[in-house]
Image (tube, rainbow, N blue to C red; front, side, top):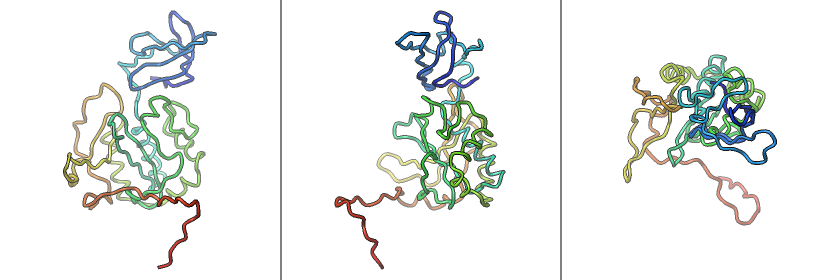
Length: 254
């Protein structure tokens, strides 16, 4: 199935050619503008017989697109690992609503809970299903090779920090990709029962990336190398202490 995104030219049997202005890959509803009409028309990709500009039907239910970017990102990371960029890691976890999953690529030291943040290296499925791009200057539906080139052009300094060897993580990641791609992704959320403590090393959650897929029934996925002992306490990202004076805080000498 070709990419469906804002800017895609479509054909409707009653309206003719138009351009998508808004899309939601979670629900299958789009907004499109036809001809010189000032208002947009809401259409359902499953029932309104919308076609691509070349006449190819958009079969949203029969051939659903990925409504989350994580499987595509896993393929990008796997190929970069093969090229020697083994200090590249993909962290994914659910938003509080559970409807979407966030993603974060990071490089350098393998420190999952104190990982560094670089602008453009993280996002959410909530943004993706309205505009299916990673934000690196890539196009909707870009291939793995095209995504790698887009990332390298977007932040060559950041990608350079991924050069190096991390053989145990690379082996774990390759095995996970072999089991899950192309239809599933992993989620590294540490579940906590209501009012209880963290469950010690449960199976890694696996989530389908498109509608219509059966729940994952393959072998259990182990946690990435470096996760041993992470369940023993609370983990939060470091936050700088707020300043109410507007003056820079002086570092105290020990």
